[in-house]
Length: 204
Image (cartoon, rainbow, N blue to C red):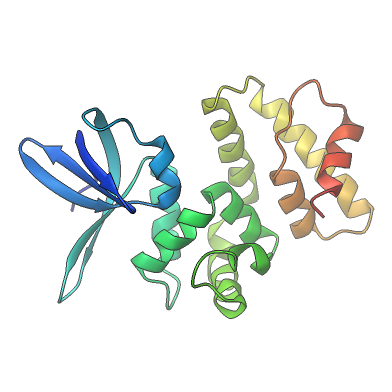
């Protein structure tokens, strides 16, 4: 129903933001990881929202980036994962880290989120594996680096990352593990192929 809420940040406390929209205060639950990126109280803020409607409660969940909301909506399609648990996962992991954990079958990374055990982490991987694309994961990773001020050509970086993944596969690692390791890197144009491979090996 509500695609986003834009207004004045009235208050923030313990994962909940209150946004004043024309005199109406919306109580919106957000990931704890988003707290440090919120504007100051009294400044304008835009949160992409998901409305959860249950018999006993109506709740709004909000995200600073559309990508975070998209991943949240994917998580709640997993059997047994509700909005509160999905929010907890995104409080502990960025969408980029979560995507690469899914692609590499790395349940231990997902299990670091509060309330998520190895069995649930495995279920998330099983049910979302077909909904996460490797090329898209690299593209979004590059975009997020660019938004943080990194300056590089996406096509060049993604090509060099793909080469690093192939090199790791030749060394005997699985494609999933190789993709996860390379996906965690912040590759710059001045890095040599050997340096990229060396850094990737640290994450294997």
